[in-house]
Length: 425
Image (cartoon, rainbow, N blue to C red; front, side, top):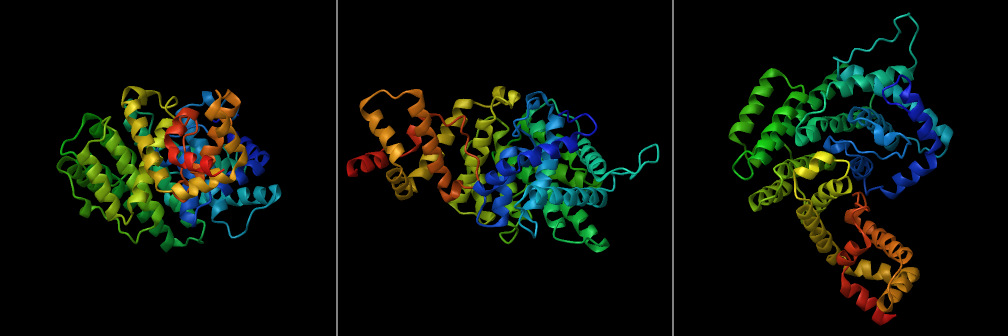
């Protein structure tokens, strides 16, 4: 599959159909307590929420895809997944999935045609032949991604340049519930603009959290501003916000706003804080205050930091420029500390799950008296990861399994839990 060659969308749909069962199981695992959490569980691991797509499909030539190619494929995949999430009918067969995709491609085409008038779509080829819905949707996706601009030279600018595509996916989720007339169409266009403007305000406030604007933050902001396609007057106002700062109370987000959009803005702020390579105490204080203003408790705040830092650690090798921007050891140690804190808060659940897993217990007992082989270590790692993933706060968060080695997980799972279980056995 070549995402830069005409017909790539049809090939990708064939791939999705062939992997229907595997995809359905993944969505069940990451299903949240409510649709917003399920939305987050599906989208967050892909990186498109943060504007930096990472490979997830396992296609043979995928590692060779450009950033632009990854973005196109992940965008259409995300839109199709959200259309399925919000569908009135449960998809249980491959044929039902095929029909859902066909209907969704029509919705995607109409969505971009209506909400982004600058995406002009011709329904016929230059020879006058009528285009298929696959061809129309493919062109709509390609034009939308091209509007985000080219890959920036600054890592953090590049990281954020496409985060607005997440708002496309969010608004498209609402679109699937409606039969948009002209009034609703204007509402969606207005919502897109206001959410983009709020994104700019969040970045501006976060950049001033330590009372100084770092070079990376300025570069990030300027590039981000050019990719939001805001009207000239709003760009001017946003620039003033960035230069002079703004308080949390000036950011127009309320506790009553959807959980998903509040989550997005909190993690957008966290990533902005990370852009100057370190997190100072004043910046952490800002994030905590911002989280409270969004109506999130302490656990939700910590989980968002775990989500952001886990994404960075899981994709460290793919985010090549990141390696020279921030300290890997600092990120990893903070991340482990957060996991330990969350694990300690769920001691009873972890203890019960360890006690009920006789295979895991046998491997742990073996390790208490003998040197474990790679197979036993991999078994313990897998079982510990499953236990952590079962904690409600982690259900829709991607845990970086490549980073969380056997040795690292021994630091995360409370030792007293293992000791108690073994003593009771």
